[in-house]
Length: 127
Image: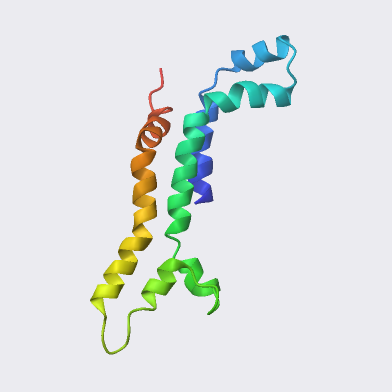
């Protein structure tokens, strides 16, 4: 998830006019102060959208968990995967577990949907 978060955030930071940084420096801000007081508030929709994307990508991370997790440190997708037996599949508990795992991501997406759309389209139109 890190490459896509960097790629999305670069677009937001490139859209900030350099004049705003210069104005903040003239007003007495340091580079650090200009970053925190000017740049971060301007890219807040991008930070929210990127944080949500990173959460969704890390929530669904299956391959790393299969390779790196031990028997006592399984993630939820691995626990659901392990519910599938060799001889039979118990569809009821499997579907219930899959629904419960997916529910937090769906609820978070529904709650913060406008921030996602605003954040992802914020740097799309140039000109």
